[in-house]
Image (cartoon, rainbow, N blue to C red; front, side, top):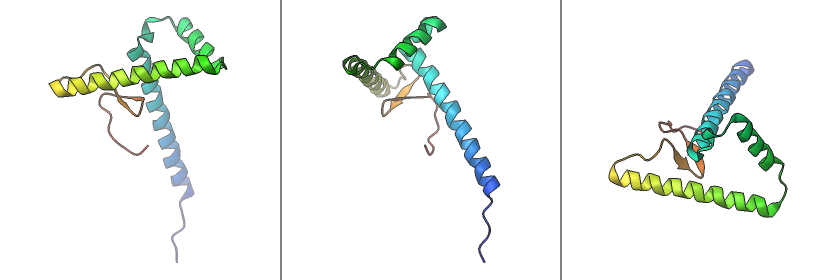
Length: 110
């Protein structure tokens, strides 16, 4: 006879995992703001800029922003590799497939 599934325990585990992912996302967003220098903006300026980009539908403009972001992350990877070669860590973040990572991230399932 099969053991019945404990749906309550499974739901609790899924909820806990969702909370962990949300917390990690917030940390990464904060690191991205800091890494780009946007932490020098006022909260109103940053919110206005984010609202503008979120509502822009011009494909050409969005593609330009995408390219600029990709170049930023490519530069971060290059700086990190140069730092690894000299035994020094550059900056407080590293990148993984274009996404900011915490400096002491523990690998785990995504």
